[in-house]
Amino acid sequence: MDIETIKSNLLTVIKQFNDNRANILSAANQQGGQDAVAKLEANFDDLNNQYDQLLEQELDVNNAAYSGLSDQADSETTQLQASLSNLQDINQTITLCSSVISTVASIVTMV
Image (cartoon, rainbow, N blue to C red; front, side, top):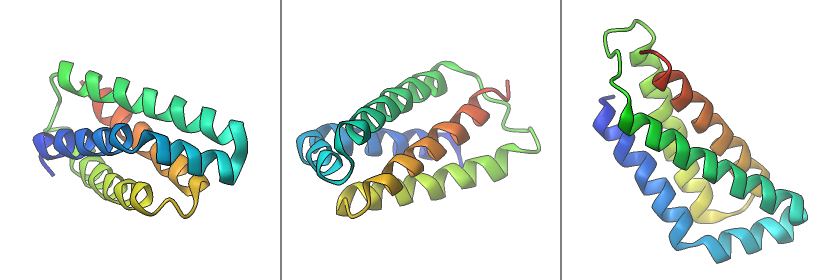
């Protein structure tokens, strides 16, 4: 997976969250209360920060781990998009968001 696709996918997820923020946070509140809302908002703040880091860093695409991590980021981002669309399990959405953050952070720190 190339870095431009990862950036595009992350931007899509961030936009999807921002465009549907009220519905997503309402579902989070119904399913998990204020704690779930706070976790979700914090995770999306972190996701925005990782996206910004990705834009700023010059990545080592020749690193042996890059290919696997970029494929993982693509897969996790796709799952997160689906989770944001159906809002069936807000805990899954929170977990997926955390996973995307962690994977992108791993890519960013490969410089």
